[in-house]
Image 1 (cartoon, rainbow, N blue to C red):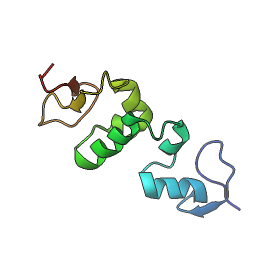
Image 2 (cartoon, helix red, strand yellow):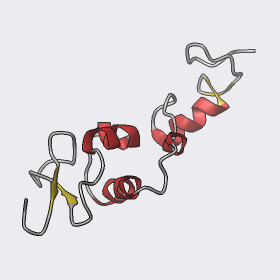
Image 3 (cartoon, helix red, strand yellow):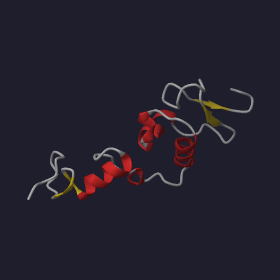
Length: 106
């Protein structure tokens, strides 16, 4: 029997050279090595909900498709009255194109 093409994986090939686990990740996320965000333990916090909303509503850079990267870049919401905006609306959200703002524009 053939084993998965992923280094270190001993799973039996199910399709296209990948075991079932890696094949499903490739189908769902486009990357067989992707680890689902639910494993970060941060579901239910404001930033996690914000991340989901932004990903579905606005263009985001590839780095921000992973919650851990997004959270690392934006940090925690400074205060209740702040929200996340893009500096340049012609570019996707990303580490160099976001700003925490208030109604006063600070």
